[in-house]
Length: 114
Image (cartoon, rainbow, N blue to C red; front, side, top):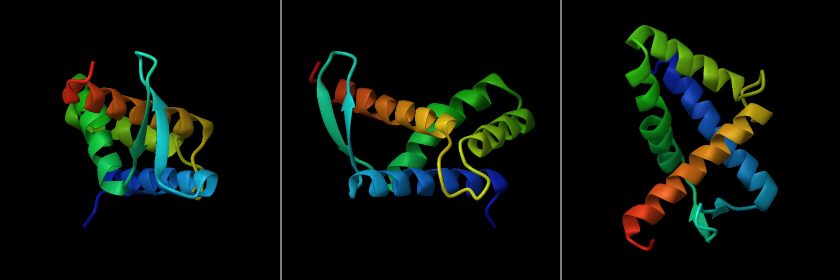
């Protein structure tokens, strides 16, 4: 059985992918790195879920006790989605854009192409 947190995470990922498909017709996005270079990323559900856990949830769990951390994460994910949980709010767009930028920065840094 999946938890409310997992459900909210999955809704957030689905809404993000859906938004990309409606806007661009594909799951690619262009990200401008801190060094000014632009890179094109292919986004999928697995990558976004991994990024949410790695960049966001891990940091929240490190900052709060488990119960409070889970509540904070759930609340944030809910704030990122509309009431039907099928579209991103402005908070969600900003959050997911930042997350994708973090993924791109980390991938670029680990590739050694500084």
